[in-house]
Image (cartoon, rainbow, N blue to C red; front, top):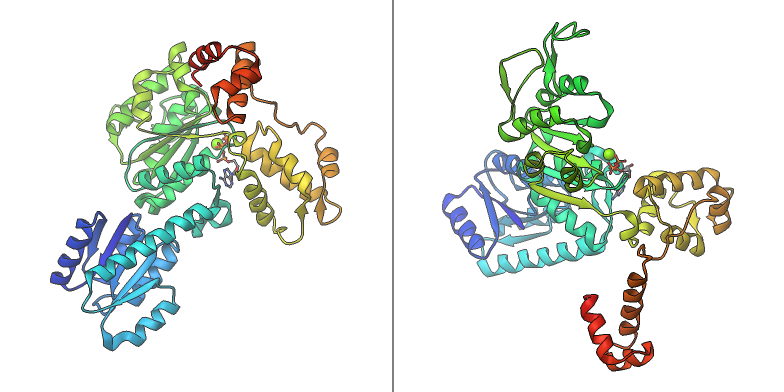
Length: 439
Ligand SMILES: Nc1ncnc2c1ncn2[C@@H]1O[C@H](COP(=O)(O)OP(=O)(O)OP(=O)(O)O)[C@@H](O)[C@H]1O
Ligand SMILES: [Mg+2]
């Protein structure tokens, strides 16, 4: 949890920030409203504590800026008794709370803790997490499963710095969306997010795409051209499908990842840039390394912060939320709904194409719908092949045996004696199997 303290009185600022730091908060401070707004823009801040009367932008202006930049952040206003009327109007503008001068430190701490626990509850219960206003509803990252929550907490932490991120996950799981969110939450958002699909281009073209080229360096190079790394200077580059790049490009990338230097094709003059790299792949790069098709050194350089997006079938609780979200995106949330059976079927499907497939399915169903209810028949009509997921993948005898033993154990509360009886085996045999299967 990061706090931003905006207070023009130096003495007061030091007392407050010292106290908050001592209580375990990560505090940054600003000495006037303008600096406060700048720091808020550059850092991911959860709670802003701001004085009301300040030179160069007062507390109200800070509040308005915060509401505009990140409505999820909370603001506490510190105010003198004589300004208490202003404090009330400030609450109306969306401040979470206010505190009177002279500030009682314990009271401030209690207020911050209350806000913190409210934020945590809200995070757990709210499905719609990141609405990035500039990007509109399409950037709302939906999900409330534990796996998604864990990912979002990594995303929040990593956004603040420039560490290289490697996103893995099957097709359609939201890799590009995560890259976009990291960029938008990072101080680099004023600069570009450049997206390069590495699989789409043959080797020589990819090299010139990434690093640029000089006029005449190859047939067709009729003029100098800047590469995508240069275009992303100050911002972020998203290297999609990184598992598909050739050994030659891997070597060149390794150098960029190490020291941000490269040469344009046909030039020997090194260029240096400042770019955050986010790479993504739907391959398992460790397998690719074993096969000898991906460099291990490059992998370690890219895999500084790994983010794995689980397939949709491993986070089925998110499916109803996503359906709702896509209905809303289509402006149909109030006019169309799914029957309970249809919804259940949607949840039990395998979704090999993950969220993208789910999204296309919802769009298609809505387009074909004849009335305001989507039924299971509509599903079957529209998608005769829409398959429910198979029972767990392991079809070997040992796999089934393990599963069966586990089920029985669960059903009798892990009482081995009972379980052995139900299974019809000796309890020593059961004990051995439990060990063998690591149950
Ligand atoms: N958590 C989510 N909430 C809402 N929409 C999502 C979410 N994840 C993905 N989407 C949507 O699903 C679609 C696919 O997402 P995205 O393009 O980011 O996936 P990807 O992993 O990059 O896929 P691919 O490997 O095919 O390139 C997009 O339209 C995106 O907006
Ligand atoms: Mg993608």
